Image (cartoon, rainbow, N blue to C red):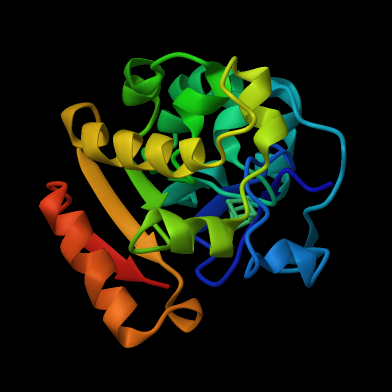
Length: 210
Ligand code: SF4
């Protein structure tokens, strides 16, 4: 699979580090196409730092990149090791580093990892996706086997919602810019508004309808 790809603005470079995910969202683009921007994003292999560097350099001049975004066909925080290891090298380009995440990092790793993420990203966008747990489970269809791997209870899919809300609520204490996002076409306008109010009640200043 391709580890780096552009989508739209070529000064923004997306980093695709894994296909593992704790969700199977009904709206996920990965179930409809094998890649984006001409890149193939499906594959079982995952890059180490040297492979990531090679993929980034293949995409053009390093110094011209304005933003690196951890976002591919899986949940990037499965590769917390790579996100941390790559940060000093990515920062050499003078670009910002953003993480697009479903907010399950602590559930995946079975511990609080916000303190580990904090030095490695400048901005995080968390997929809120629903106004309540019931709708979240309908839309995002969590994968309980990954909770078991984290020492969680596989019989409680609600952990996915609770873990995401906990991550979103605490992220502003660690990361400078935190955004909550929803996918517009999956929700009614009332639900979008409920999500906006929920994010605000959690202290999140930035909200985006994708
Ligand atoms: S969390 Fe993201 S990568 Fe995972 S299934 Fe949902 S949209 Fe796709």
